[in-house]
Image (tube, rainbow, N blue to C red; front, side, top):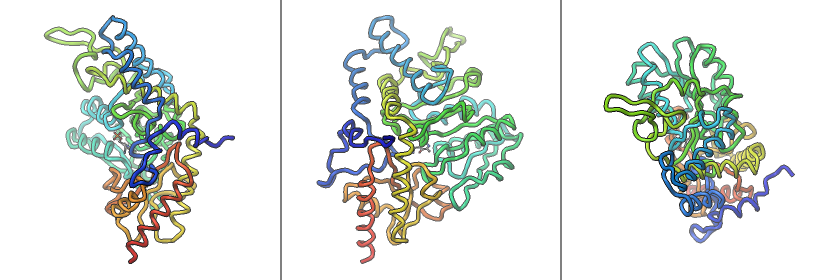
Length: 410
Ligand code: PMP
């Protein structure tokens, strides 16, 4: 069948067996960080147990093995998101946030000035919003926001008007971590390119959950985080078109990113090493490739369908009582998450009571404060799904929410 064999998948995640408050854990905070399968933990252990050494420098056997594994990991990850340039188009970063900052500093600081414009959306994560906002202050470039409508979709007419020949960068979130909206990134790329602007896509909530092809989108830059896609913390990917990365100045200076150094000057290593100064996160990089292989074995189309079905089910069940507001598009048109508020209960109280039931959800502004301001709430609760979640777990969430509702009704 085309459905995921969730029982089989769960065996790869022993953490899901653990108890919280003497009740079996229900982990629904996957948009924040996903759990890590044995295969990925094994890849980390294998590295430290068998070939731990610094990369690129040594000619000794262990260093060669580490270098090959680390370099090939770039190819694996590049291929996973459709980057035909392989490692040359795949910079390993710490996370999505670092990808945004790398481009803002390495490209933006040199290229932007007064009169230039950066176009974001009202649903950007702080990783993109704050980075470009502050870069605007440094360079004098104006920052504009494409509005989000009542239903949680981008106003594409406004986008057409806001993106002009003054626009130098459009930075947009692929799938919103708050609204669950999947944005028309390829259409936005066309509009940006019509005006000779670059487009940066924040794929933190897309790469883990759906097939992504950066070339089909025609993104100039595309960033994501390993810890949201069954990989380890401390590693992420920044895709950039080769000709753009080649023209860009380095972001960090130091060892491993240089070719020739004198007291007076230095030249840079080939891509992507030019952007990976110092000893990188080797174990995490190798393990990210293991995570990619793990997800590919399951199949990204099937993963997407599984999560979206769970989100739709959660949407329907949570709204049964009529006192829950879910932000963003309808249940059948969203990524695998639901952010919501229950009329009578504050999101933080809700997540704390839900935690008593061993259900892990997130409460807060999910790093989209201005969007929450616009929605008129300080915070929301968010349940987000991954490959190992089940409808029964959604039922447990709904029961826990019901408990909170009753407690606060008293
Ligand atoms: N963008 C989006 C859409 C996200 O959901 C997140 C993580 N919440 C980030 C960026 C930042 O990811 P990281 O903290 O791994 O850099």
